[in-house]
Image (tube, rainbow, N blue to C red; front, side, top):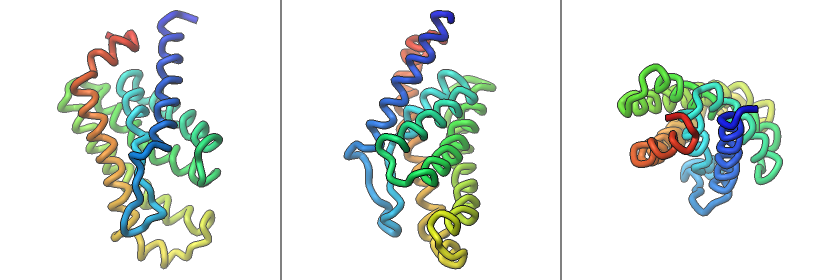
Length: 183
């Protein structure tokens, strides 16, 4: 294994650890309209990994982080793990893919906006499809929560994590790329 591959795996491991710490940090808060929806900034390190190593690595990082969170600090079991993998893979995959085509800060912003919108749409569909199975909710109950709670929460979560990521990436992006041996 090459030293750059070892450095990438090590960096990704550190990002997984940071993500888990952020999930249990005091930076969490419930969505007022639906307190069972809880914001946490755990996707920020995953976005960093996706932008540094590319969209495929970002999705791999998402899967590893989701499983690790589920086994260590997760309270939502298999359902939470599946939803996190699908939501964050959408956000990180699209954001990092857009950025990878032309690595400018404007493209990073555009990628994060597109990823946030896509995650919101995907989560709306997934909640309609999976909440009846995992939570035993009726479709009517989910539809009633869609506009006041589910869609705004998912957009807020994706947008806030993207904003935090963009602030970090704008100020420390070159250092992060250098650390990861990419630039």
